[in-house]
Image (tube, rainbow, N blue to C red; front, side):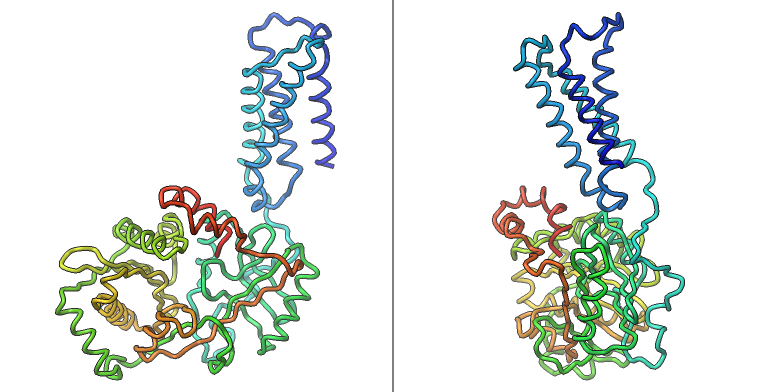
Length: 440
């Protein structure tokens, strides 16, 4: 119905625009012509926004496209009026301006109002779900950072997504809805997936496929720790260190020497919160760009520091004789402590600064009475992976399982990767916010 109204509105505006000027009555009010243009296109803008989707995520995605289409529509009519000179309705930049302002106003009225609650049939009430990490007291699986309920809410607020909880039989997924895709969780090595009865990956794949078939999503992606730590066929692994007892006594003599040497070389570590955000982001973003990767936007870290609940959230700065040379952003939840985003560029990494920072982070995690210290994810057998194994970590294979209605779908579009890899740094900063919503 809304799309029919939009079509009729567009036809009505076109008909009025191509009526000869002599058919309109003369109204002695200054600016009445521009006011009519404004009202007509404000109505079109409102109807266009109303027609696309009731999903608040899709509203935000399409609003600029809708505005551009309406501006082109109004401008096209103005050019045609000038072409058909017999109408005596000449081209006017003023009319284009008021057409555009009207369309923008109509969109603002629609998008500015509070959206209705999400009515996706896949979403279930959070109250009926057990608290993460408590549904099975006998389980040895630790609560992960991704199990913190506040994390998905912060992701949604930062990137304009919506947090949802879905269930199919025994499978419960706390995830992010991007409007078309369901992901648990973007920008995180593992999501919040609970498969209460099934334990192997193949039945999980079948369950997700069944769920996807009856949903409106185009794809579902889950990231999780494999059930068997002995699996060696996954490209990514996470390194977990048990810190219930002081791990420093079990480090090799070579590792203890490196830690001691880093202190002698003048490396110190400062711990703080939002007051250190600028320092952290300057070195983090520069390091990510230098290795051809995408830095997350500053507002993501600001929102974490402001809204992360039920655990520690803070910044570590590595300094060498008061010169900032490295940084890390750490999170903790229910005794699980993780260094989530870390940057120690060369030559400070090679000179031992990384050992000073990691050892200080482990000490800090133990002061919070944590049980697990996570080094985060890395590619299997990479240099980063080898570094983490020095610390007696246990490899946790990571599974990234994606089921799509279109098997040829590619998340990382080639043109996005081209922008990320070849654009100079100043231009890259302009598109990072856009790319971070699509490359995760």
